[in-house]
Length: 202
Ligand code: GRF
Image 1 (cartoon, rainbow, N blue to C red):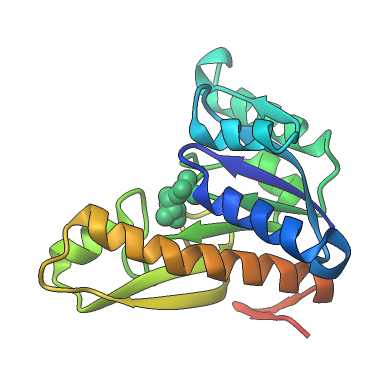
Image 2: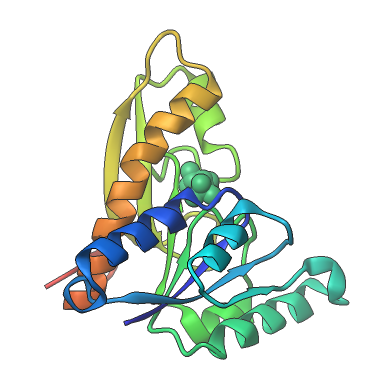
């Protein structure tokens, strides 16, 4: 499988994938990262890709006339690398119709909360503010809503009384990185089908 990974930030999920594939071997894992894309320059996620010798590309909203043009440009940039699977690993933009027309059903996102609770850009903060006692992370396929697509796997993290957003997010990210690496490998090696909302990995 050819993976394109999209990032907007520190890229520790990307790094976990790269490290695991390096350690396990592409054959055994079933996939390799062929390119890393971002919606902004100068982020650690891109630097990680460059250090690993992986091609990168940046498609910025402000370089495109409309959000639709940006979406089409992003879709074209990703398509150029002919991915089997696209992974959003801390990519903080909502993609549009063009992108989903090409990659719907094989575009995976990781979200730092137990969906359908706490979707959106502040999943960690919102769970904490709500007073939830457990939260976690969700790896899911992206559809045309915000964090609403079919769930592939989830990991649970307890919320501690003394937690603040950053401490809680760090513990979630430890679980999230392992889960993402495991799920992407399983999808690559075994494929999947979607029955209603249910993702079945044979
Ligand atoms: C992850 O928790 C992801 O779910 C969230 O942002 C974080 C990205 O971390 N949306 P990183 O860039 O992979 O370190």
